[in-house]
Image (cartoon, rainbow, N blue to C red; front, side):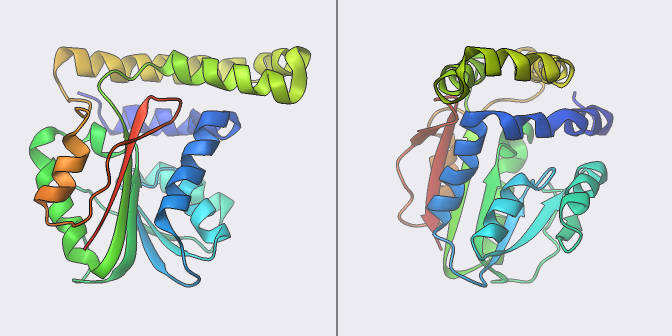
Length: 234
C-alpha cells in the first residue's frame, strides 16, 4: 500500500509535470469545463502542489485547496502565499458546511483512493456543492501508460522548440523525470497487486450519477488519452 511517505517523495518532483504539454492541456481542459466566473468559490479536492488551483485563480476563481499531504500544500503555499489550504482526508467527512462551494474539481485523485470510499466521497462532494453548482473530475483510467504521456509531449515539443531544444531540456530534467517514472511504476504496481484500483472507463460517470448529480457528461478523453474527464450539476 502506498503510504504518506511515498506521496511526500512523489510531490517533491511532481512539478516537473508543469513542463509536460499534455499535463498543461489537462489543467486547461478542467478549468475550461468548470466555466469559471469571477469570484466563485471552488473546492479543489486533492490539490497536491496547487497547479490546478493556480490556473483557477488566474481565471478569477477563488480556489480552496484540500489535500491530505501537508508537504504538497507547503509547496503550493510557496508558489502562492495567499493560497487557502485545508489539510483533510477525503475518506472522512469534509470539513465544510452544506452548500458551501459554487463549484468543485478534482484531478487525478480519486483513482488513488480505495474503491470502498469512492461513493462516500461523491456524496460528500454533493453535500458541500451549492444547488446548481458544477463538478468536474478527471482521473487516469485502468489502461494508463505514463510513457504515452511523455511521448505525446516530446512529439508536440519538437514541433514547438525543435529536436535540439527537446534534448537540452531532457538532459536538464533527467533526474526528476526518472524519479517520476519510478513513482508511476510504483503506482502501476499497486494496481497490479490489487491494493487499489484505477477507475474503470465508466466508473467516474456512474459515481457522479449515483451520488445524485444531474446532466452528467459523457466521458471525455484527456491527458494524451490516458485520462477521463466528466462533469455534472447539483
